[in-house]
Image (cartoon, rainbow, N blue to C red; front, side):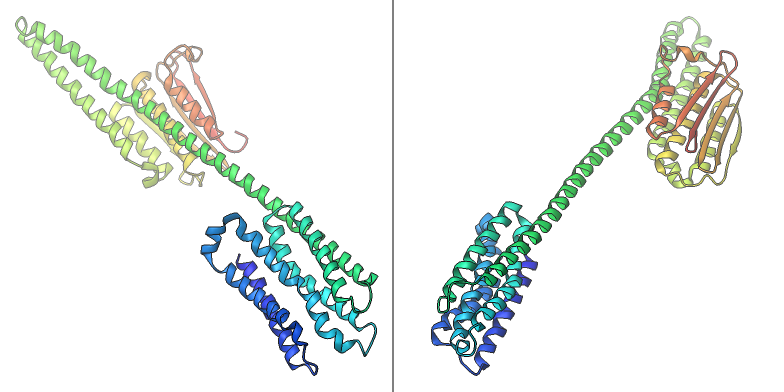
Length: 412
């Protein structure tokens, strides 16, 4: 609409200059054409006002733009009948070809004015409407020219040629604009669909991540709270049975139960703290992984050998989170099941290749039984690595420990 209003204001300026020329001309225009001159000035002026009132657009809705286009076209088509009537009487005595030359000038000037509604029409509608517009303007042009040239003769072939050329120009311009707008609409549609798919993917990924974190925390709380509370319940049952028979044995069971409760409470607090803490954001991957490994080694009393590159580059939050969670899950499995004395953790970067290696000298397990057993931790690590395009390899043998290798980037 701002572009349409700009074009209409240009039309108004051209009409104003034309009337100013008539007023200062040696031969004043006949009084019969004064209403037409007023129309040529008022038409673009009133159309500009029409296009500047938002209330009309809300009221007329889908009819608002077609009315404006028809209005602009009618104002442009008034030229062929207005200028010849004003000047024919003055030019007739001078030259027999003057009226035709004047009509040719008016037709060429009219192309500029009719481009205003044509551009807006092509911009907003399809090629069918452009063809109808070109046909109507051509018919009206021929009719108006025939009427204005009636004093001389029937409309000449040169004027018909100009009308044909004008129509061809309008069709080519309209076709070009319609095709450009169709391409733009298709691109906008594809972009909208891509954004919708990306939003859905992001939402699904977020839900999947939340679900996996919930499953991991459920397993941790199950291993900590469920096992602790089950053991305490059994010990309290024994304590109740032995309270009257063997007080010393009952005190031993009581102390053991209190110790188990304290350990369970400590593990629960640790798990809850991990939900709130953001070690990667606060420390970075290298320091966060070192702190995690040392914390597990201290709490579960096993030796730790750390080899972590200080400069790991920038792999993005998603990759760093995956590496941290895989290391955390591996250390948790070692602490709970491996019965290891020494753990080795290596994190190295070779150009664009990141490699994490975690090995232990624990009891190991048979990897072929993973699908039948309850190795949910290994399954979670594999899912995390596949999600970011990494690769996870697990090597283990009963009595000879376990080695977990995660790689990302490069040729893996």
